[in-house]
Image (tube, rainbow, N blue to C red; front, side, top):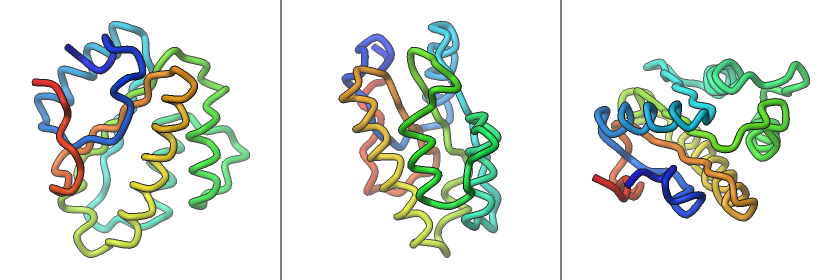
Length: 141
């Protein structure tokens, strides 16, 4: 079962394999959900994080390129007006080991956004490849 077959019950941020991410991306696209794959560079910084999200999620021009604006946009998404959202973060294992503060901030924002959308009954799932062991694994096989 995919998270998208379980409505918004599996909203959250999960570590996964590349194969799981690919399978869920196909399932999400079949349901016509917004899917956004964000490839993080080795030398990740807040501006590169903001740029990746802004491009992948088609943020409006008023996006402020800061942490608060990222949180605001991820809990709005009215310009997309879709039934569900899947974000795949690639390259986290190489991008964040030296940038723990950025990682913690990003994870807080993504978890808060997933909780918001769950309360709204809208699927919002973030998959992290090469994610740290403190992230829960994707609860499907």
